[in-house]
Length: 99
Image: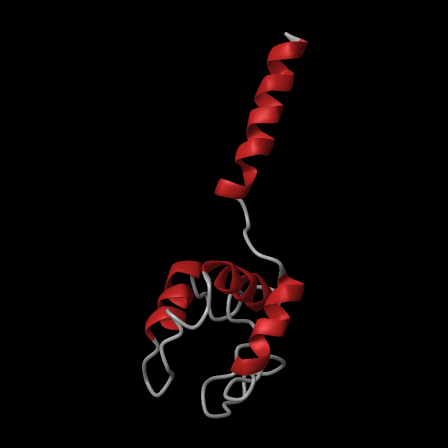
């Protein structure tokens, strides 16, 4: 029984990155520097684009919608689909979740 529990635990730990949070917020903060030209991270005040404080908490954004906006741009925002790697986007979204 203990071995089964270990295997289940080991399996869940091995699969955690596939189902859990992705990205490194510290690395995402560095990616955000280019976004900070148009977006405030520490307030809801609009710069050229909307302020992003509370994006995932008070504004109820979803990761899929944010990733789509990053990829496709829109409303004056350029598309970053080919400018940022998948890892950079994961890191950026992890950082945005901390705001």
